[in-house]
Structures are given as structure tokens and as C-alpha cells.
Length: 295
Image 1 (cartoon, rainbow, N blue to C red):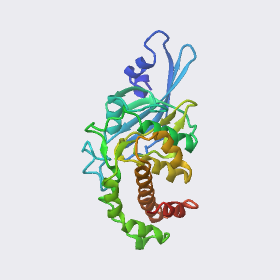
Image 2 (tube, helix red, strand yellow):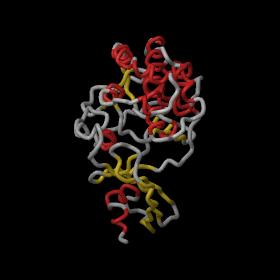
Image 3 (cartoon, helix red, strand yellow):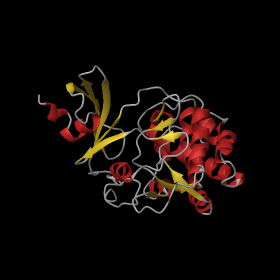
Image 4 (cartoon, helix red, strand yellow):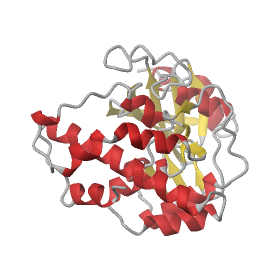
């Protein structure tokens, strides 16, 4: 197979402008991406003639063709906009102190070539602190037209859940029945920049900064939304005070706590339904964790 079938020349030139030379290129598939618009994801290994090895992730995208959000996948401010991660990298991701995205080597057609950052996962408390620091930064501009606008409200607008068809803790459908009231409360809170899926599976640690993967749902949401994703993925009760320290007074503590607690309950309840409907067992303690955030 030709090298250019594995990685375009323009990306190879970004890795090595010509002083050293490319000794070899290999690739293997990671499989389909987990994002709504992800097409396929693969690891490309480039070996230079001096022995250095550079590993990149090739990630391609395509519009949604089915599902409740397919019609909106072409709308730039919808959470499922299929070109958002491409646009975000090309525009310059709004990363900040202690939080960054993988390095971009280049974008070709509908594919990104980005740094492979390994599999080391940060401690949840460290991730919570860096998230707060990022969201407190003045560099986070919410005015870009391609940012997702209130992902939670957009998702719930097309979510009709039949709780009679699943076997779950009775507290969860009760939470769901109050979703309109919860969304109304969220609408009155201050908004912040939001990664959109700040779960532990999307986080890596290089020893210096927390690295966030999968920026396809980057947008703006009521404060506390991202922390809710982290908390649900770790069931860590201790993250809110650490996150508040990272925010350093940028938002009122009562607003942050309210946004966080509502997001945990709504996201947590809907995910519990999703897992139960697919006969996936809920993690131990999950229902108690969600219900304990009920306001």
C-alpha cells in the first residue's frame, strides 16, 4: 500500500518538513468513533529516519443519516452538527490553563489528523480543577455561530422515554417527570463554554495538563453541565468544591451548584433509561448517585 493511502503528503510534511525523511508508515483501525458524527478512527504510526516515532489519530466524520437528530446535523448551532470538531480544530480550540486538546497536524477533506496522547487517565479531582480554570478564563468566547447551544435542552426536546418498559429505580422516572421545571431553572442560570462530553473516557493526562478528546459537542451550556458529565462517569461526590476552587469566583457558587445538580439528575436519569432499555446493567450505586442530586 502506498504511504499516501495511509496518510496524505501534507500531513507527512507537517510531521517532517524534509530535513530528516520518512522511513515508514503503518496504520491500524480503532473502529468506529463513539461520537454521533464520527465515521472511523485509526492510529497512524510514522517512523522517521533518525528513529523518532510519531503517532497520530486519523478521525473522519460524516453527517447523521438516521435517528432523532439527523435532520439537525447540518445546523451549525445544534449539538449534533457533524462538522463541529473539524471546525473547532480549524478555528483554534478555546483551550486554556491546564486543559488542552491534542495537537492538530492537519485536516484533509472530512478527516482530522491529531496527536495520539496515550491512555493515561487523569484523577477526577484534577480534571475538575482544570475544568473550572478553563471555564473561568476570559478567552472563552461564546459568540461563534458553530458552537452548540444548550445541548441538554436540544436533546430533551426530542426525548420521549417510556419508563413503563424498563426496570429502574422509581426515583428516576419521578425526576424525569419534572424535566420542564428543571430546564426552566437552567435557562435562568449563567452560561459557560462547555466541552459537551467531559466524561472520564474522553480525558487523558500528559503529566502537565488534562487533555480533552472528542470536541464534537463543544458549545455553551448552563454552568455546571460539564462537571455533571465528569461526576456521572466517576460517581465522585467530592468534585463540586474542587470545581468551585477552579472557577475562582467567576460564577456565584449557588448558581454553579444548582446547574450541576440539575444536570446530574436529568442526564443521569436519561442515561439510566438508555442503559436499562438495552438490557445493560446500571453501575453499582448509579441510581443512588443520581437521586442524591435531586433538587
